[in-house]
Image (cartoon, rainbow, N blue to C red; front, side, top):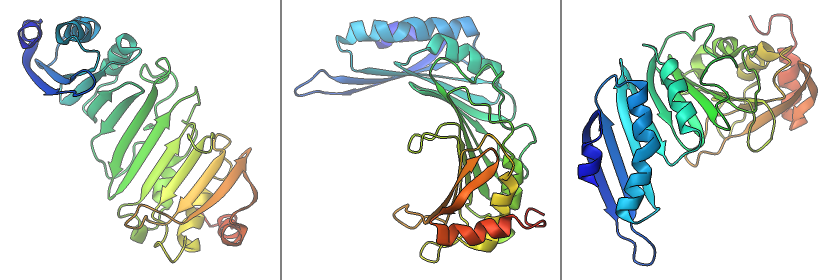
Length: 278
């Protein structure tokens, strides 16, 4: 197996780890490292054929194979098996730039990690026309550190997220709440099944979401017609639990007073003040 993989065009090294199976087949974890800046055809040839050949050589279908390489300054990886690999890899190679730190392609997603910045670029959210958005059934994830905060965007289901003012959301977080604050924009949240924005860090767990911290964040997205739900949360505790105040959105306006209403109403009232987002 190692000999076969090492003989493939562009391969610089191979790592093989076997986990013996007492009842089922052995599990094989294989890493194939390629030379820097390989051609697209070279990468596709390995992704297309290598895992199937390893399955035959190992006489086991329990084979997970990672193909890794660098493209410019960007670390690239593709985890097999996965669907749509022959569409995902060329798409990912097209969007690589000096701002992208790493690209990971796996069974259900393409994940782009960006170099940290002090201010989020205006055009950070990828449009639906990006080659890397909407590849088959794969989600596309973007993640970036903005100062001491973290921003994460998940594209799926053909939802255009570019209208969501995520930069304004980050800017609206009070300065004393930005350390480890997290802004998460999801085109289709798995739990609530809606396009959702969630912001963590707007208060201390046990003391609740702070009105003065949450109101400017909510104000920043009032009027946005893409969002269907906004969740404003405290920083998580040691068990990763947070206190959450949620707002259902309809046509850019909040429907109701929030959930729970006794927590949501004062945040909404403050957010609707003329100077709330300034």
